[in-house]
Length: 88
Image 1 (spheres, rainbow, N blue to C red):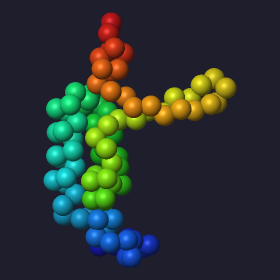
Image 2 (cartoon, rainbow, N blue to C red):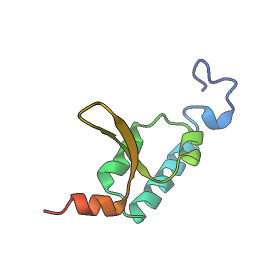
Image 3 (cartoon, rainbow, N blue to C red):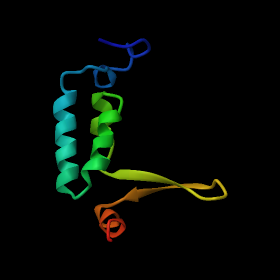
């Protein structure tokens, strides 16, 4: 069922679409197979459940870095960066 404001957005933007859970499961598997850590992949569960978001978003993890002076930059967090950051 469409939420208020979603009526004119098309089926891929509707929440509670029966395709969503399968698409999300496949996206998580692709990211896990690519080497992304499970805790980063679990963030997808906090996403707004619509098909368009799953199909249009790249299979990557981005992080926002906030410097001491409040300047921000966004960067892709790759499996290699995760490996380096996880070293003892």
